Image 1 (spheres, rainbow, N blue to C red):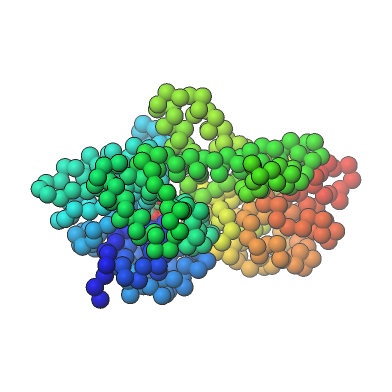
Image 2 (image 1 turned 45 degrees about the vertical axis):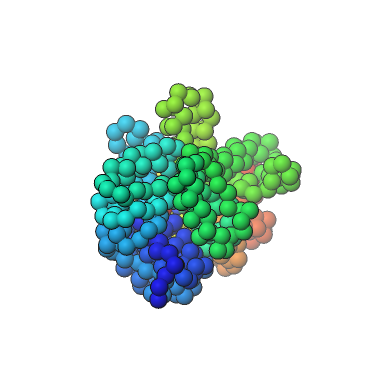
Length: 464
Ligand SMILES: NC(=O)c1ccc[n+]([C@@H]2O[C@H](COP(=O)([O-])OP(=O)(O)OC[C@H]3O[C@@H](n4cnc5c(N)ncnc54)[C@H](O)[C@@H]3O)[C@@H](O)[C@H]2O)c1
């Protein structure tokens, strides 16, 4: 079959895999190929055990793989073959040198640009899908503009706004698609070509275009605003605990104001995931770099409150359980950073588990999708950890449960059965405010949510 367009994506991760699967699904007359330096990942994409779990993803892969969607290891050959190249490589926080702990590590992006330059035999459109500091396209252009002869490259910015856990829904029905370009004749022509791809299934009014720097910056700012809402409500949760207010009631009353809106106002142990912290720190770094310390401090406080909320949660477990956790068995329900994903990058569960182990607690970890990643994250820990997927088996003989991920499954558990199998007095620390606290209290648990009064059977013990 002759394909209308040939699209390549470099980077077969949480973004590259699902986004390209959606393009292949919606554009059966385009050939879409995804490459990666990680060959195991490519093998996994070609197997029945996909490397990324997302509801709906496996069904789309089944429909498209081998027809117009391909996962390949030959990066050089595929660069030669394709005219439109998405770059979706990782851009983690730098761990060394200038900007360590804050700035983006752009080495993977730069290597990709150099590979594109090295293997290209014709002009191409290069699309930044990775989240990048503003002005990165300039570096990309400078590397690519050293091409010899008639070959030229047009760099576009098309940041990805999908959220893990609902990636396929977000990709199929996005709030908006953002495409930034240079406002030159060739830039606008390339932009039009990319608009045409999305217009196959996204309504035209949702495909917005901008200059390339606005596009790069919008992604960092969107993540900063989302994380800021989480930290805002979490900062209020502490006050609620002291003032006998209920953070869910406050969030409801506040969120019903149409200027504010109700989403992203759930108090809990804070945000995780590979993006929020990294992108805010990157924004903070950029502000400091451009001589804006007040702006940098404002955004940095979002990350500080997130850490504070996790530390508070641990200290609360410790003080409630009579100031010692040594030898006590604590079951962690949920290890992924949010529900409906197996991704554990920057999950609050990692930090909380490590701190519980430092208190010499025995930790049992249970999660429907993240057991493998949890074991990798904690591989260097010497403490007592067991991994038991079935929650009913995991809680047996435990002194306390800590709910760390908002999986639906945990709302529906038979807590009576669970209570019977635990050591008494039994505790639940609901780090996501998802279970029926009153019901669990009536069963016999001492229940401690976040930002609302605890329900304790002990006389004279304040809830929180
Ligand atoms: N995960 C999300 O929810 C999300 C959402 C929006 C945007 N983003 C951004 O998208 C980018 C990718 O994120 P991700 O979660 O998919 O990362 P990831 O780590 O899951 O995937 C990146 C992949 O790129 C590959 N890679 C690195 N250098 C390469 C090279 N030179 N050639 C070929 N492959 C190479 C890696 O092996 C890896 O498999 C990041 O910038 C991230 O900030 C992520």
